[in-house]
Structures are given as C-alpha cells and as structure tokens.
Length: 197
Image (tube, rainbow, N blue to C red; front, side, top):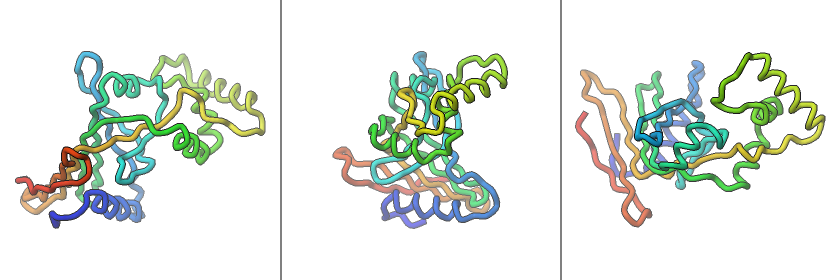
C-alpha cells in the first residue's frame, strides 16, 4: 500500500472492489463497538449506508441499547473485514446523529415492509413470539393503508466521525501491511503512518 493519500479515497477503492465481488459477501457489514454505562464493551454488526469525508453512516432504532450507549458515550469504533480480499479497516471516532432530512431521505428508500417493521419493532426488547412481531407489522400495515409510511420518531441514523482510520491487508508469512491515518487537531487534514504488522 502507498502511504501518502486520502483515507476516504482508499476506503472507496476497497469498498467498491468488495461490492463488485460476485461471490455473495455483504460488503457493507461492519462491527460497531460501544461501551455501556459501566464501561463494559459491547459490539454488534450494522450496515454501512453511506460515507463521505464527514464519516460513516448507519441507521437504527434510537431506543436501542447501541443508541443509548452512544448517547452516554459517543466514542465508538467500527471494524470492517472483507475476508475474500484479506483486508480490514478499523475506524475510531465519535458518533453523532444525522440530520432529520438525511434520515427521512434514507428511510424513504427502504422497502415498504422494512419501513413497517421499523414501526413494529421494539428493538432488543423481550419478544413473546415471532407471531407477536408479525401481528405488530400487520397492525402497522393497517394503520398506514396504501399511503406513505413515514419515518418513526424513534428511528434515525448516526454518523461516525473518524479520528483514526487504519487499513490492514494480509501479507505472506504474516508480514501484513498496515497504514493508519490520524486526523489533525484542526480536523482539516490527515497524517499517515505505516505500522509494523
């Protein structure tokens, strides 16, 4: 890997290559790591729904444990691994809510049943049976009929604004290639450093 380049250009190149791979991987899957109120780590996979020089965006129920944890401590980490390419990207930064406009625009692109499901789900709360969930989806479908399904007030997105972005690619004999980009204190530029494997 070359060192002197913009980390978002590198990420776009790797991401688009993973998206073109026809072998069925989910290139947008990323592990989001947060900490709870006692400082205990928590991790789960979410889907990358957009990125640009501002950061990396995903969406969720804002009453979920991950959302509550980010509200209490916005310091988070993302890990993306494309196994077929033997590449990993690690991102550390802070999570901040996307704008209402961004959330509305993305929600409108989701399939109708997914939008109804957002209304029906009390994410991460105990669920008596699968039938209960399906009944709640049916109730939401009756509520909105054939009209538009608006974004629930408890559903939105978060942008992880990166402070560091590390690119890792597997090398022969574990001589892996690692480059970390660190945002400068003014938040306007990046410095890159090659790391030992």
